[in-house]
Amino acid sequence: MDPDIEKVIKAADPYRLTGTRYLHGTDHFDNTGVHNPTGAVVYPISLATTFRQKSPGVPTNVNDPNSFGVGYEYSRTGNPTRGEFERAMASAESARYCCAFASGSSAVTSVIHLLESGSNVLCIDDVYGGTQRYFRKIVSPSMNIHFSFVDFDNIDEIREKMKGSYKNTKLIWLESPTNPTLKLSDIRQIANLAHDNGAILAVDNTFCSPYFQSPLELGADIVVHSVTKYINGHSDVVSGVVCTNSLNLSDRLRFIQNGMGAVPSPFDCFLAHRGLKTLHIRMEASSRNAYAIALFLEKHEGVNKVLYPGLPSHPQHELAKRQQHGYGSMITFYCKGSRKQAAIFLEQLKVFSLAESLGAVESLAESPSLMTHASVPEEERKKLGIDDSLIRLSVGIESCSDLIKDIDNALKAAIESV
Ligand SMILES: *Cc1c(COP(=O)(O)O)cnc(C)c1O
Image (cartoon, rainbow, N blue to C red; front, side, top):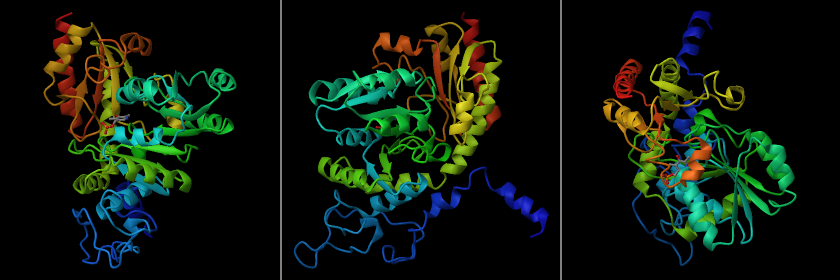
């Protein structure tokens, strides 16, 4: 091929070639197949709750790949639109299997239901606030499952303790980077630690999305996503998924999915699947914006400290380079002053919305100590460095210069009040 044309083709592709996979899935994907007989290029929303049987106990259409070989009977158990999304998500995460749930939180719940009574779970100490609340306040008091919240920086110490006080650990629960302090953990090292001790590793990959991190390739057994965030990406669906390469885990998760019934609606699956198709484009655009904003914040007189894995000042920048395919679009920073200045900053923003959640096309800003992490005990927050001057940004895909102007104006207003 003409080398000039080759150059243009190369420039048309982003850094990771995931676009075809996100749009069409991998090998098993075939939109001309029996499961989509009209040839519609967008898979239909199937609202039926029940499916006609030819003979008692003989399900419909066992050949439909979206039914995973068991056909359709009842929509909680199996739904064509959900199956289509699950297969697309499995492809996106380079997993063999995926189960979709009604929320990221119910995806977390389903993983905990894999455990037997008496199990111990090692969980990263600054795990997502809602996950922490579920572990501490719902599972711990009633299910005879014990949680130890640890910092995986001290891996040798944890390895020692797994012979003693952490002995019956069956599951290690990790987020990397964490929320909101963007602390990284070495996934490969912790997967080895888990496997050496008869445990499995689950990674909540919400912050990176499948585009920027592949935990299964690093040795994790389970990947969880809040689809509500980057995968759907448009602030209009609450949903979650669990992905794995293990047939055994997948069979058990599917049993739990049906038995507990926390399934997403067909319409939510349709929207989330539509979101997935532009994941690569959105992640590229928002992380480019975030990198520029992080550099800008680091030099701003109204800022004490910026946490962003893409900055050389981030203590785990090298790990981020090695482990992630990119740095993502979450930024956390400490503004000068305290609660009052943080509040002024957040109130003055005009392009960023002052709102919880993250991972959407719109830029969002929030105060973890007053909003997303208010349910984390204050003492715990202090230990994790979540004080009232901490601000979390979820950078979207607006024009970068507008976002920077917005931040600059709001920061100036905040400094004036110091
Ligand atoms: C939002 C979030 C969850 C919970 O997901 P929902 O869809 O809100 O139930 C879990 N983990 C992380 C990292 C999240 O950001």
